[in-house]
Length: 585
Image (cartoon, rainbow, N blue to C red; front, side, top):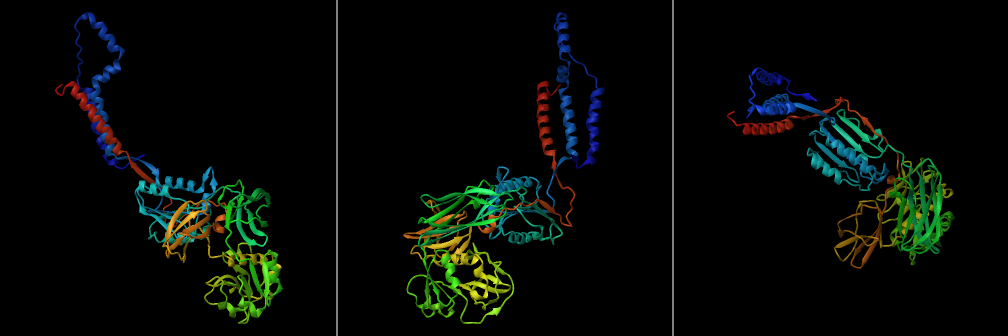
């Protein structure tokens, strides 16, 4: 507690003067007694309650003294102090990615962060607050807001978007609000390395609120399935992100029943891949882990079994190991002479190195090597982007001696050193820019797994739009006679509508969805990105700006409004006392 105007302490002489006046004033107490017979009774009553009698006779004096003391106190402007946030302005960066749904202390990390934000909002003391949420594109929730009620309302409305955090984008966006002001930035996330913070600002203090507890997470990293001659073949990749061996129940079900259910053992900090063959024909498959961990979003995955091309036609001029890789995954393969590969009449996936027949093929194909250019020597490690073709195939340990020149206009999804290794054409052709003889790839398990992924991707029919991440925007040429498409879940629950030609925005929650327009039906799936399936322990820390005053900050709250209310009440009571006694007495 403190006083802002000690200069007015001299006004204390006024209540002291009134007190002295009352001390030296002659006072007589009138006591009418009707008869001496009642004198003793009157004296008994007076002695029995002397304090009450004194208060009744001097009520006006006490009321005036209290009022004058409070007036002096109000002139001194007393206040009490509470801790306030440092800086001229405050910025909240809120991680709304899927990992914020991890459970900590009987609630999610996101809910804990919201409670922290509400507590911090109470310490703003009129300072402007800006709130930014992370995602594919950072979102500005409030800007330089000072209304506490509005701030708390917006914080309560925050929810998880399930998108990747893309913290670097949010940090870049937040820097546009600093404007050379002393700023305190609070980042609410699970884990953030200090090296990612833009520490070049001397007037900015960074406060990171992370996940400080250990979470033993079991994650279903990938789940894929494809139709074969003997039913459905599936691959599941499971990861144990804890330091203890985990035993959990894994089940695979279709729309009607469980197809497979059994306990699996996953060693600590390891990833295992399980394969399943001859599963019953289904429209979709759902894999589930009965894991008792703190993060449930990565315990279930679904895959839609779209109509697929079941046959693969391989150029007889390619190495025999290409054919073997497809056959090892129980895929029907036919060998076709090189001169006939461009004349195929039967529906299927073509695998060749005859790049000149690209325009003759009606469907996207797999090209392994090129016959129209010469290869160049390369040296370096193979690096891949996040693409569905590498869901099960890890190419980091293969050796590549030479590659063919890149194809302009194609998207590179794997490189060797600084040279493209695998590219994808705009229409979906997959091009491996090396002959099998130029690599040791067939010696690695990733080779047949990659071919399995190629077959799954190239055999997708027109009734399947593909797999999207939560809230992903993607232009789609849907080709409906109607201008409106409606999105439903597999349980026939309506989600929202989109216009043909407009931006397609995937639903927020992972799962299987149906896109409908009259009699036209297209299926698609929404899945978490691989980054959102990794739970790491973070830390809470603070990085001070060099030009920020780091002594404790306090905000002042005045007692004066409350004193004035008490004074008003005292004046009303004093008026009532005077009225009862008579204003002339």
